[in-house]
Amino acid sequence: MSYEMPKADVGEIVLFMPHEGATAVPAIVCKAAARTLTLFAMSGEAGVTVKPSVHHVSDEGVQEFPEWKRYGFWEHRAKDPKIALLSERVSLLEKKLEALEPKKAK
Image 1 (cartoon, rainbow, N blue to C red):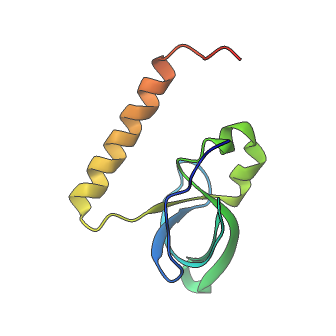
Image 2 (image 1 turned 45 degrees about the vertical axis):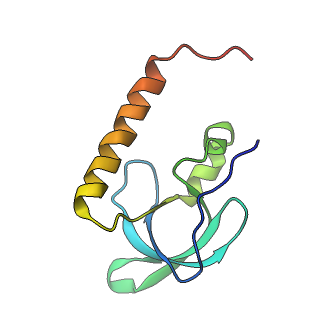
């Protein structure tokens, strides 16, 4: 696999989703590896929870290794709410287009 995770710096605030379709919560990057982040994810009244081995939402390896999904997903938070909305719409369109494409032969 030649996947390259988007850059995220230690101390940066990103969004964490515990599973696909979950509501995103703010999280602070506390460690960045080549393909995953360790995050301090906000967890309501409990404060923060450490989330190790979190893959970016665009990591296609999660489809190949579904057990990675149990660690959740992260993505950059948009600086402008309009950008966040557009980003979400583009993501949905990409998924619909992907579903329409014929499966690649292996």
